[in-house]
Amino acid sequence: MFSIVIPSWNNLAYLKLCVESLQRHSQFNHEIIVHLNDGSDGSLAWIQAQGIKYTQSDKNVGVCLSVNHLFAQAKHDWVLYMNDDMVAAPGWDKAFVDAIQSVDTDLALFFGTLIQPETNDHPDIIKQNFGTSPENFDETAFLKHYRLDGRGDKEGASLQPTLVHKKWWTMVGGYSLEFSPGMSSDDDLLMKFWVAGCRNFRVVGASRFYHFGCASTGRIKHNQGGHIFVMKWGITQLEFYRYILPTLRQPDGGKTANNPYNAVRATWLGKLRRLRYTLRYNYPLEGIEAWDALPGRGEWREGN
Image (cartoon, rainbow, N blue to C red; front, top):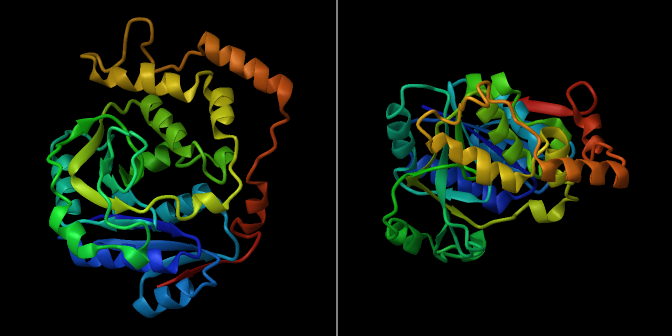
């Protein structure tokens, strides 16, 4: 069984569809935990009526704080992080279980396969249009055709849903708060797992989810995630995906004679970007307004 953690920010219609799909289409009895950012749209009342475990902050604290807090509440070893604008398809969890059992380590990251109306040419996303919101979602067509694309597993990294062992999430420190409210926090997390020695990154073809897309991110002020990534790691995100993640396919898993300790070495492009950003910007923590909502510095609540 998994612990499923879902951050939500006043998206009641999406949240209902997400949770109900998990309850109907799961083969195992998973733990579901929701973090409600605000929840004044009726989300809090609905979660309480359903008897679902939840945490709540009185303002939107962003993805990094929300998800880290949810992971701390999870009771199972394997934790799935997904967004509230996703709908689970039948068999999603059995496919993840099979993936876990196919490797001999818990230092692994598994990703669901998304189905979206638009893909922006992303190779790991299936393009099928079953609606753009809960109001026009065609569930009948979705359940009939979600397996139409016959792709299988693919080695590599993607976005949510993300399945990870709680031990390793804690080991690498979860989402880094300098990326609050959350832009580029996923790429930073992948890098931290790579540095920790993870060489098992897999998009699971049979674990499928419909994704409406950007139900919350369009409402927030974005942090300069790409800039922060370069300042932290000394390489760009594009270089990370092009030159570091592919090393997991090498026989030695990327541990070459010139890099025996998984060290991230700054590139010339990274160095130039660092210099440029240092001269151009003063780097405040973009999500500093979330500080007042940290435990002990605002109203955080838990239920069930």
